[in-house]
Amino acid sequence: MSPNTGALSGAEAVGDPVVAVPRRAIAARMSWGLADQAVSSLTNFAVGLAVARALGAVDFGIFALAWATFSAALNFSRGLGSDPLVVRFSGAAPAQWRSALTEATGTAAVVGVGSGLLSVAVGAMLGGPIGAAFVALGLVLPFLLLQDAWRFGFFAAGRGQQAFLNDLICAVALVPALLIAAQHSSVVGCVLAWGAATAVAAVAGCLQARAVPRPLRGGKRQQQRQRPDPYVRPWRDRGTRGRRRRPRR
Image (cartoon, rainbow, N blue to C red; front, top):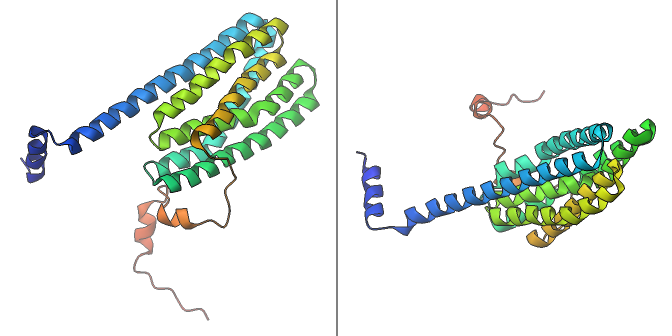
């Protein structure tokens, strides 16, 4: 048995809170993460079920195209803002986390506006029911991506309960929105109802975090110096050590 192991056993024997608190914190994070994922999955399932009952097979296929487009934009937004936020600023100081959160959510908003404009343009060119669905999707894409960025930001700060509350707000707002959309039985109505409920949760995320999204400022490098990029491979640093720069001629 190593000395460190013996010290740990002694701390556990006397009931040292230093050992017990992290375990409770990890259990709490896992619990809130599972609860949030359950609400998010059930919400998505409810959307699909309500749309399938309100629309026919053809219209449901059009809605599936809009959903696939949203999924592609969501993955792109996460790769640019949400995933780096979780990797680089999990457990960071509150001031650093809040600054990084506003930039990550700002990135999501910019991606949402850009992809939304592209969706509107494509829908205008296609025309018909498919084009109308893409136009409606373009109007709500910024809110869809922004709400997802808030969730990632809350988990990065260890505030899983805030992410759970935000998804719960979206689920509650979705009920009357889908009921209204079901009366019209149109793809556009279902897409707008889905986006309207998410917009409520996106605005609630601003109030929960007490922050406003803003795009990344190009001149801001302080956080990058404090938090080195984890994606840079160590061998690149080792490969450049000991090399002398040749004088310029």
